Image (cartoon, rainbow, N blue to C red; front, side, top):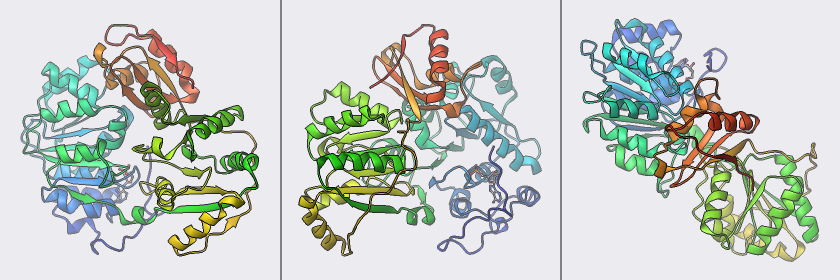
Length: 482
Ligand code: AMP
């Protein structure tokens, strides 16, 4: 559990938000306000200051907020302020991607509710026995916090009713979508009244142009939401561009390795101008000990899908691609872009570079140029209206290539076998299994499923999936290598 001390870390000041950031400026019940003071919450965090007023006035809110931003108290206060204690129907539902997060959220809600009498908050997560949850549900609860798979199961079994739900919170919505919970979320939402208020919190944010995922979710699930983006995160979107001149093709490859060793990005794309080159560079990088995969138009669809799954779930850290093949690639977090050659067209260069530093993160873009290509630098200078200078190559401190964070297991079962992400997550994290944070993206296709887990626990994860039955069946499990 993250402990935040106001004294040590005052919330960053926001220039563009309400000047009164004390909780007493809000229409909150007295009991909640006095408890906040006793918890040492005196000033609102930026996310709280921007999201609480619209949430309390009944609006849907779509907020960009990371762990540590005070987001739990933001939606927690809104939930508690609206509660009708005398009614024992479930009025608030918080959906979280993992059991650990659900436990943390429930803990914070209970802390916030200390000043209110008789508030019942129940957690319903996968990996915990079903029976005791049924017992608790029979006693009634005001707020339920849980993971999508288990909540859906309770709904289908009739042990949970959301007929009186007034507020739905999707916490870490981006992560839930990454984990493949879209269909389960849709099924849960279909069981809630359309009059509900919906609050969606996500660490990453869809661009206006993006489709699918969160953007889709926003359109289908929320009603004219107030968008809360923390200005500071916007402004922090910085892309540092570096240019290096290399004498010839051999020097080009060495320079790429050197830059990879210096920056050690968890995810990066190396752009090449030709298909043949993507293959050659990926092979050379693999030989040099990096985890690189090539993406180009020559691949069969199923190989392309597999490569994108491995890259998106961080089991492969370097994607070597042509511009055409990388089109439509929707990776929220790209730490670095390497231009193996500077693009022939300048707008292509700008587009490549803009793929890093999304979602408020900072990014780095390195471009390699031979003397023959240097005229393109001059043109770029004109476009950017600033001097573009090449720099000397930095010297890496370690010569050992880095490994990707995650590794992937493939299960020989998918949607056709009624497998859902929650089943896989449940099997991995149940009884003596992994911790929720050790599990990454889960992708369930028609006849197979891919799950990423931290590399250090891949064997444990494989053994657990091989030992435990899923939906009463044992599925073949293998580790994917590329
Ligand atoms: P979260 O982003 O919800 O994980 O919250 C981060 C931490 O900040 C938690 O430990 C909260 O208890 C704490 N916190 C939330 N809001 C405030 C506040 N307004 N003042 C001080 N601490 C807070």
